[in-house]
Image 1 (cartoon, rainbow, N blue to C red):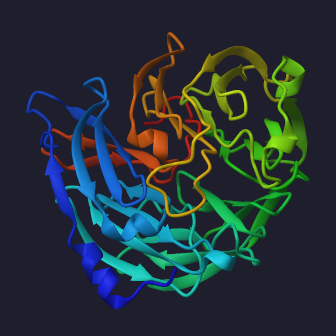
Image 2 (cartoon, rainbow, N blue to C red):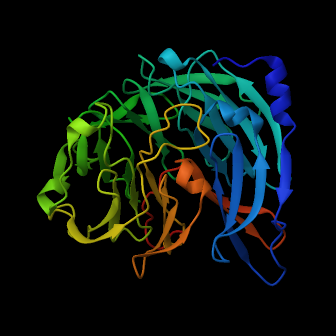
Length: 388
């Protein structure tokens, strides 16, 4: 999936179709949007106006397969990784998108795979895992300005998902084929701690605001685990079969992750986890942690996860993904396309492009149209109460 120079130049000439401008009304202090990226496209939805579609941008290069997206509050830029995630899928690329001016600034190809990255608070560094099909454990440090390689940090095998701490000093690295969640110091590149052993690799995960607890999912496991970031030990293993949600393993590929989506509410009262085989999202109360195990509060039926994503370059199975809106009002269900109201715990909207992707992030604009906040990774992590 290597990209030619001509293809990279073509990708910079994006086509934009407006349903409405993204300039907030003068009376509003903030306007919030969800940026949804199925292969080859970018759709923008207004969270404040019942998820109305306000923009569709064609991104021709990403037809090779979007693998991740992250946004920089400091610079107002979006970074989209696309192409191969290593191994038989080959190397990949990353493009830089100006959120305020709605244009691709550049696209850069690499001799290694790409996956789901995170960007530093100052926007100067993008931490890029080199792909779930890669045989190594390398996260590349890329320059946020021009995309060049600045360094590397070693983590778990088959680098896949990434979370960066609020201050940018700790890198949380999820290796798909590695049974420990690894945490590294971004300044020295050294491993600070490991959590595990976990169930069959690290798939989607999240951490709480004080960075004391990690919540991880695993290949072939319907449920999640809670680990201590202080001791590295697993504290609780929550098996959804114990709550009456069984699944037939033989009906799925051996690499399938049935709980491919986990999200923590901003106030850290609940953790939401996806149940692909049964097409539900389960809500667990976590107020008793670390001593008391998470308690199932309710389950929400969501739209079908049976059909493959369309359009899709590869890895088209609807594995799912979950994220909270920053204010905690909504949970968006990737690959199902549903939006859940966290108060009523009912589905209140359905977005067709979201039913065909797991890659999406929230972006907020101020009254002057400047980027006031952008999600630094796809993962929804907890927030320490009292911090903005």
